[in-house]
Image (cartoon, rainbow over all chains, first blue to last red; front, side, top):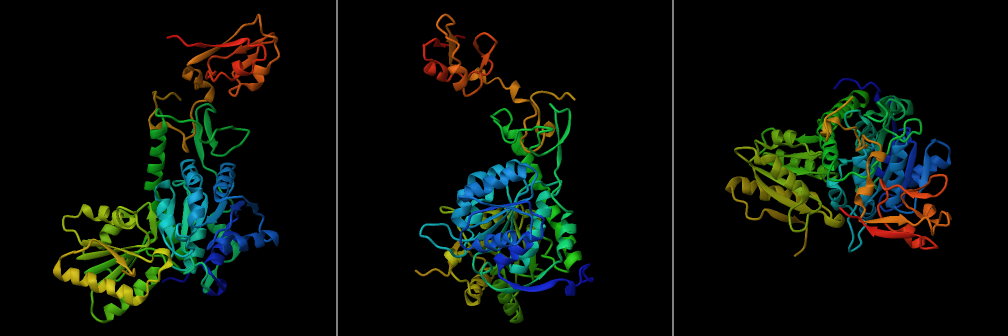
Length: 415
Length: 93
């Protein structure tokens, strides 16, 4: 790889956990407003950030609201006024934000939200689970999943650039696994402040849109000199047309995510696959496993081990879950005999949410790989290498026999 | 810039902004009951003007007048009128 524009010795090495990595990233992003409410395992992000505010290290307006519903509402208000806004939450907090998530997306406000993935109640559980993120799947947000704390730092900065891109103008959720990342110490490299400012092009730029009653293009923000109304009544006469805008904007996201990933690579020397998918050893693989988040590190280790024993196995980490990269993934999976889809969550009465997407991905192929859904790790249940290996062995057996006995399997649960 | 009505999504401003002023949205069309003021009883106290949630009662310089373009017919004015000068009458076709 070519030397990055910012050489490694100019990228400070610090020991932080995943939450702190996000807090440091936000600190460098010229964020105007942070509104947040504490919830484990997210609390450390805004706790650290509030220290930066108290110490005068950032100019950000910090709004300690009374709930997550209010946190997202305050971010919507701030972003509608032209601010760059950030918040963070997890599980039940994200569920309480649900109503406003849709509003942020449909009003095209590029808010960045760190979701520290945690299981939803009941019973109450603070550990890692993707059920919270899957719950906001249809809200119109871009959803990115990171593998480690370095990527949490990198992706948080990228998220502002992606969301605020003129072709996009959508909010972005950066997902990091609760405790596995949020509370685990890791060395990460940080860019100098001014490099991050330059990467983002300074403060948030507001897009313009033509408004008939002004007879000209106006900035998409609440400004008394060119008044506009955000989100007023819109019935059967125009609601459908307005939803088309979100559908079209989502189509433009993959290219922007890829472009930002390339720019980041030139700048820092770090990239994550093509930005939307991170494949490993997929070229000639008979069995490919797809996975989101930190578990991909374990899966990669197992793939490496099985490859050394001569098994043709590979993996694809799904970095971008919304919009879902159907075309890119189809190219990677089309040669496999069997695909195992790991889901740290389930849609009760159906399958894991990424399994449904991958079914859709593969249906258009004339010759399709067999598919098995592995639901694993609910409520933070560990997924150690021997368990992952067991899954690969089952999939290799299916590749041999061509027979899927159970389409939906549960990995690591006691009977 | 005139566009065919009703507009397609390509001709609308982004972020679900309305392209018309809300003044052009005649919410009075929703009304089932119409408030009618008996000016013989009305004392010009302006309680109705104060309570109207849609600002659909206006002072014309001499008396309160209902703006039927925006009055939704909720009946709050009739309920609050201290001299019962406002009657809610069914809209007829």
